[in-house]
Structures are given as C-alpha cells and as structure tokens.
Length: 447
View 1 (cartoon, rainbow, N blue to C red):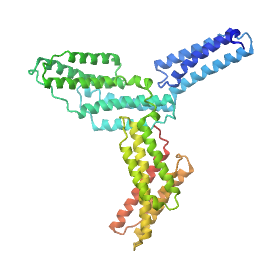
View 2 (tube, rainbow, N blue to C red; view 1 turned 60 degrees about the vertical axis):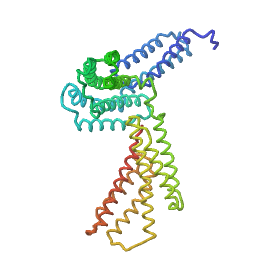
View 3 (cartoon, rainbow, N blue to C red; view 1 turned 45 degrees about the vertical axis):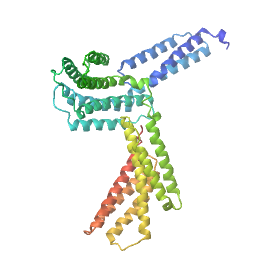
View 4 (cartoon, rainbow, N blue to C red; view 1 turned 135 degrees about the vertical axis):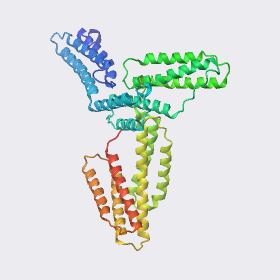
C-alpha cells in the first residue's frame, strides 16, 4: 500500500502501536508489586491504549480488522506481562523475605535508635540469614526479578552496613565545649546525625511513613552547610572533629540514592559485573583442567601441574572484589568450593596411587576404610562431572551411593586403634563434603 494513500485507521493503529512499544521497556523492567503506584500507572496507560484501539473504526475492512487485532494482542500481552511480573511466585518470595527483615528492624533497631538496648548478636545472625536466603531466590534471568532482588538486597545490606559501621567504629567523644564555641554546634550536629541513622534505616526498610528520603536529604545537607559555616580558627583538633562528622553525614546521604540505582544503572545485571566475569573466567579454566584430568589416559602425570595451577586459581578468587554485594560473595564462595573439591579429588587420587605403589601390612578395619576411600574417589569423579538438578535419576543414584559409603564407614570397628579412628573420621568428613558439594551443584543457584 502506498504510504501516502494509507487509510487513516491504519495510520492511527500504527501510532498507537508506537506508543505501546515505548511503554514496553517499563513493563519488562517493572520490579514492584500490584499495589505500587507505578504498577497502577502502567496499567492505566495500557488500558487507555486498548480503549483507543477499540475505538478505531474498521469500516468492515479485513486488513484494518487484522491490524486492530494485532495491536490489541500486543497491548494485552504487555498487560499480562505486567501482572505476571508483579505476581510472580519468586517476586512474592522476595517480598515475604523483605517483610521478615522489616519486622526484625522494627523490633530490634528502631528502639535502639530511640534509646533502647544495644543491637544483639541474634539480630546480626538473623539479618545475615535473610541476606543469604535472598541471594538464593531464583530469577530465571528475568530483568524484573533481578531488579527486585537487587533492590531488596541493597536496602537490607545498607541497613546492615549502617549498623555495623556504627557499632564497630568507636565514636569520637565530643570535645569539651570550653575548647571553642564552635564545638557546641558540632556536638549538636553529631546528635542529629545519630538520630538520622535511625530515620534512614526506617526509611530504607519502609517502617516509617512519616518521613521521606527527600526531606532527610535536605536535613542532612543542611547539617553539612551548618558545619561548613563554622569558624574553627585553624584549630586542627576541631577541624578533624568536624571532618569526621561531615564524613558520617556523606555516608548517610549515599544510601538515600539506592532507590533509583536499579533503574539508572545496570548494577542488578551481575552478568556484566567485572568481579563476576573474573569468577567465571576462573571457573572456565577450572573446568578445562577437570575435563583434562577426567579424560587423561595417565592422570598421575598431570597431578602436580594441575594442583599448582588450581592453587593459583584459588589465589585469583581471593583477589576478587566483593563490592559489598552478597551475590558476588556467594558466587566467589561457590567457586572456591568448586576449585577446592577438584584439589581434594587430586589429593585422594594421589594417596590411593601411593598406597598401590607401596603396599604395607594393614589390619582389616584400616583396610576397609581405604576400600571405602577408593569408592569415594570414583563417586567424586562422577559428582565432578554431574551437571543436572535434584530431580535427575543420576542425582538420586549418587546420593544413594554416598549414603551407602557413610553407612559402611559407620559399620567399621576401629578396635581401639587410634590411626584407624582418625582415618575413619577423615573418610566420614570427606563423604559428607561430597554430599554437600553434590547438593550445591544441583541447587540451580544463579547470581
């Protein structure tokens, strides 16, 4: 059809489709819930477009009817995508975990900044458990879920950081106001900063509806302006005291920008993070070494070189910057376990080879332990190659094999011999570690 003679209804439908297309990125990246203002705004916009599409007169023409149908289907698809993002089971899981954190902060932290008791070890353990559970929420690569998890983790980690910074850092004792008149003002500002910490935590966790980020930002900025205006008369101790309080305020201001960070950056997409890329490169090399070892005709010749390189990979992982991100921390932890397990496999293989080359007299219990270690070596080789999940038949088979080895070790009677007791204990620990490693490999964790 000549564009110059295009039917007005077709032109109108194309215009609506362009408007819908412009809304699509907001829908795909929506990470909130169905009661959020942004959800209702996007829903209204898309519903309005549906009404606009429905109002287009087709004049009974088939091509216009088809164009209107396609435009309506595309808009309805986005409405459905919006609803699914807000009600996805893993999005609900993230919100449920966040509510636990809210209740914890409301019970333990808000009273603390209102003059209550000190922060307990129980709180620190509970918040760490919440962070760990959030890192294990699966996103399936969905941008909306990645954003939701990132936002929630960032808020909770910020709260944890504010509290830890406050608890670990011994605050400077206020200088005597007799030193200089400006000290009284700095002392007063420091008290306001301590109150602001509690307000900030309550804001980040959504447990204070009487305050806003914008207002708190203005208050903190005003405190900095007051401090900058002070005349310290060149007194070094007063200048240092003022600088310390200003640094505390700037730290709090930094946390107020967290809400916009997931939208304004791609920080939630850890696939592009340089620390994750470094971890992935280490894992790639580790897998190459593993495949070389498992497929080699004469693997003992490779043991020393492989172990040396694997130790080097552990060193590279130690140098990875965690960026205060629990997902990066978990990714590094898992990578270290992957490399360390391969080193354990090599150590076990070497020990078994050495025993074959230099046989010696052994009592039956000690010999039984070594036989089980031989079985564990073979099973560990299979576990290293395993790449499925917990529903796979091979997972169930490997789990059963490891359980049998543990039962076999339990049946070994060391007959009071200390050397045999130690060997059995070591073998039990190895079997349990292999079971844990199998579980880790099959839990489908993602960053």
